Image 1 (spheres, rainbow, N blue to C red):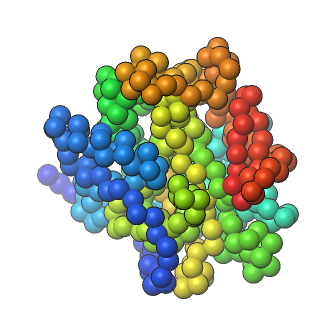
Image 2: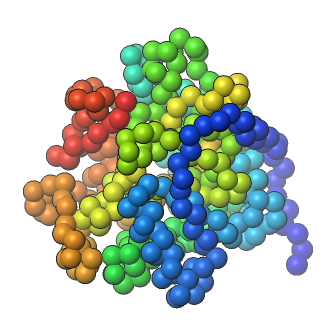
Image 3: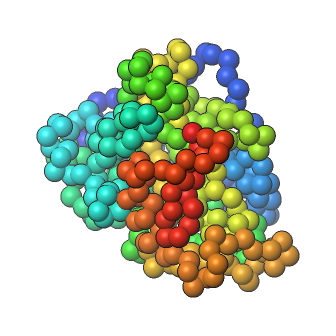
Length: 370
């Protein structure tokens, strides 16, 4: 088979891993090669359910995309090269033509530039995003990105079909539901906002770190059902553990770091809790480096009403927790994502006890952990 000719892009050189002694979360590691058999899926479903009941985060290895060898014409390393193009290869003035309609439209598709969100004490974020819908034709792209769209499309399909869908089958099995229960809500050709985010975080001035208590993103839960983070070496992501302590997520080469979000909590009647996580200033030996991330945020099709799957034998046994008084009041995926997106970092929060802050979206309390 002839080799695939791909556009040349500058190689992104990842920062070295930290050598500092940090307190890491001890997360489960799921071997995705087992998804090829019914027995393997049954084993993984138990492991996933246990992970969701303890930490809420877990790793995936052997997902089918290797670090350096081409698989389905994709390479992990090259995906980071391509991700960097959206930032280093696009002039600032051109980015303004591709801004996401966040505040008014409740959509992250396109650029979120730095200093858009208020973090704390008047400090604004230093995080830039370029978000591409799973349907890469949904919006036009900057000039430097356009030749790379076939590879970006293949990467989106890999995340959605080869990682997300198998994961959703495991989540369904954990509730003793038919395997495709959640898959049928996440159609790749459906109308929705599942998207791949390229995220670039820049070091902040020392005075901002003091004002914001070294927090880059407050503790929060994600909007959608499943979040897939491609592990990268700058150590800044923390998870809130059951003992109330924040612990770091360790970098594992070519692994995926996975957590669930609000929408999975709604669909599972509270059985799968959304993971509370935050981003903080990296350790001392990494503070001069910028942090480049690849993340796939999965959401159901826009028209899915986020009500519990009450037919689940597990929920019938353990009970159903709702965040609303009646299922008629439950939001659709479209309403929930628009409400949360348009409010995050842009509205005043009601300060509660123990550092928790709150706002209300679609009648549902959304908490932030500072």
